[in-house]
Amino acid sequence: MNYPPIYKITKDMFATYECGDILAAHSIVKSAIDNFPEYNSKLLFWNACLYASQGQSEKAFSVLNYALDNGIWWASEILLTEPDFLLLKDEEEFRHILSIMKNIEESDRLESAPKISLCTNNEEKPYIINLHWHSTNIEEYKKYFEDYCRFSQTNMCFIQSSQKIGSHDYCWDDQQLAILEVLEVLEEHNVEVSEFWGTSQGSIIAYQLAVRQKKKCVAMMPALNAEIIEQNSTKGLEIQIVIGDKDPFLKDVKEFYQKILEYGANVLFQEIPGVGHYLPENLEYYLNKQNGKTT
Image (tube, rainbow, N blue to C red):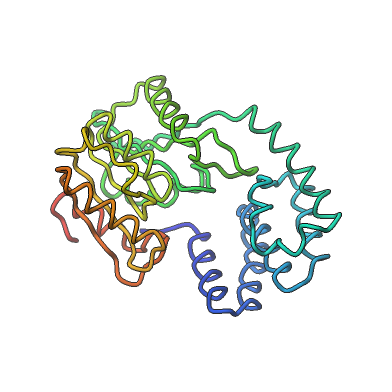
């Protein structure tokens, strides 16, 4: 599958950062800002974090102010819980930036609404409903699946949450609201559903919808845990799980897998060697196994 440029940028940056090579990670981010400004809602945040982690607070503040000047903001909770910003939290400039972003956040959230994007290859077939991960939007997320849809002639419906956590980013933190919104969007646009898919946080909502509508669920790099299992509705549920063996959610997902098997679900569990919490480059290989294909 041909993923958008942000995929490689993200993998390379975090790989170097986790190895402790902060300067190399920062070089990747600064180069990406120059070459891929369409991703600046992520890149500028990382840029500020990396400056802060190196003790360069003035440069970090400069990046945050530049973001504001260009209509980019992040939720106050994200700013306050980011470890790299811990040393900045008592600075007057940080509190000033936080106050401005919080005001924008409250205003933008009032106007936010769910959004739908359809990839139609056969008007006679139903749609796979595909729900994005935390901190993205459907314009960015759907690019990961465009090749798959085109080559497999699959219809796919992408739905964006209304729960805004940044100028360009959304989440599914309020699960009940998320489920309600997805169902309302599907009804409003008269979308016939074949399966529910979700990546990371989106997998939680996809699973709950699949249970309610008795559809298959495909959970990619999921954030599933045993506590969300609805025992009385799980028997016979078809669910496919694709997760990397380096994924930090793996332990929770394995507990979910064992429990849901006990409750009578039909599960295809696929653990990918060497992969962390991101979509593998050969994702279509694993997705195709749902139809008995391996190539």
